[in-house]
Image (spheres, rainbow, N blue to C red):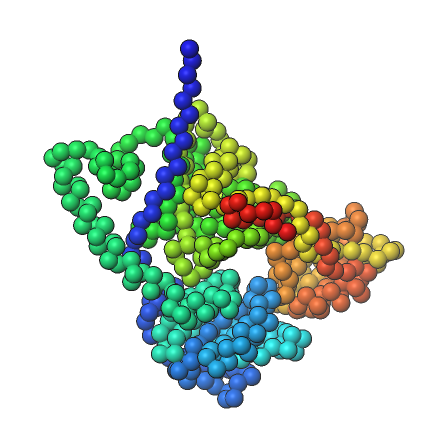
Length: 478
């Protein structure tokens, strides 16, 4: 009689590890923020001010740039926060540019802010800087520094910054406080591990008081037939991702939302330019069919906030039997969509670890439509010649010659104000190469230029697949 034994081990380690968090650039969370004077400012009671001038209030420095669509779209939200907390908080939008203070970059940065300020009626102070940003190692944006009334850096936050996050930081729920609370637990852990090791050298190979495969047991040389584990953040691990055809799949210290995207969509992140950057044409289809941000229909969504809490980073590791090992078709470690078996393993592990129900549902979401007016062939059809893309200057426009209309997607990607998360769909039905010159430094100016050429870029809504994450036992979320 043939017996089949299916063994599933999903081991979740809850390890308290001290993680003294450093802000990039060598400034430690909990240390004094540099006393720096901004010399070029607007919409404040004085032309220059220093970080020290705001002692007694919370200071939020929000670094942004003209090419950061997320930064620009979040300005109304920051303005609302400033108005609600004006007695407690000073928000400074710090425009980052590349060259010297007389450059076109600075002029374009100032021009864009003033345009957005007037259109959105912003109540925000702005400063322009290239010096402090280098000290702080500001790269990707938005990059937000939260400094307490005593001049101490309390948090450094990425894009998911809102009033709730700010209040949590102001109330002391920052990474530094969490780390201090964990110090005692780590000391006791280290002491127990040492004592256990001494016993094992003389008596036993594993301690029956603790689970197999845990750090409290000396099983590092064990050979796995199958292992699927999820661990909380650890500073001992090098961040990264790995897929191999020899039975190993790991994503180390990743945000929870990215693990869910991997498990259900096979990719952790995408936008309208991903297909080119990763040499992955299928990514464009993903961007046009699947909405990036999940719907969190859960009572407590704090686990999905990772920008200032290392405790909300997790590691997923899978070792699987040789008979299931196949070639990984995608060279990038963050692509597993060609392996539905691996995706199913991740889904099962996340379900056991966190208990959420997950579904993929159709929802109406915004997208960009490139449309054409009638009878424009004579106006934009190419006259032939060499295929060219000629820049008219940074944020001034572009001249495109003898190119397919799809080339516009690459240009729109770098236009200030363009939301790279929204799908871009060519609805022009133009099947010939075009000659076109677009002038302007932001989305609205480019739209006006398109209209002069018989084209338009408008926003619409379409059905898209969205990941819906809900509490266990909850009804379908609408």
